[in-house]
Image (cartoon, rainbow, N blue to C red; front, top):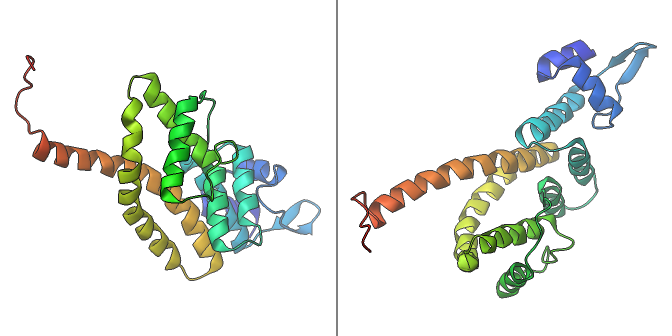
Length: 214
C-alpha cells in the first residue's frame, strides 16, 4: 500500500507518518520509484502501536523509541514485558524522600523481589518511591501499610492480564496485547477502582450524615 492508504487504514495523518519515519519509529517502506514507497501489514501494525503509545499512553517520542527498542530485542517474552513496563513508566522529577525509599526497599525485601528493586535503576520502583514520598509530604506516612494488600489484590488483576496476553496467537499479537493491555488497563483500573470505592464505602461507612462532633 502507498502512504495514503496507510494513513487511511491507520487513522494517522500523512505528515505524522512521515514524521515517524524520520524519527525511526516506523521502518522505511520499499521504494517503488524515487518518490514512492510501498508499505505492508507490518508497517500498519507498527504504526497503530506507535499511535497507541503516543495517543493513549501519552509517551514522548523518546519514550516510544525505548518501548520499540525493548520490543525488538531477542529476549524472552517475560523479559520483554519487563522492559516494556520500564519504558512506559515515567518516574518524573519528584524528589524522593529517603524514608520512602527505605519503605520501598523493605516492601521488596518482604516480597522476596529482586528483579526491579533498585530505585536508581528501575522506573517502576522509582514511581512507587515517588508516590510514597508524595504521601509523606502531606502527612500520610503510613500509606506504606497498603503496599502488601495492594500487591495481593493486584496479583488477581495481573493474572487476568497475563492470561489475556497468552491467548494471543502470534508473537506480534502477544507483544501488542502486552503494550495495549497495560496502557488501556491502567485507565480502566482507575475507573473500576473508583466504582469499587463507592460500593465498599456504602457497605463500610454508609451514607448517613457525618458526625462533626467526633
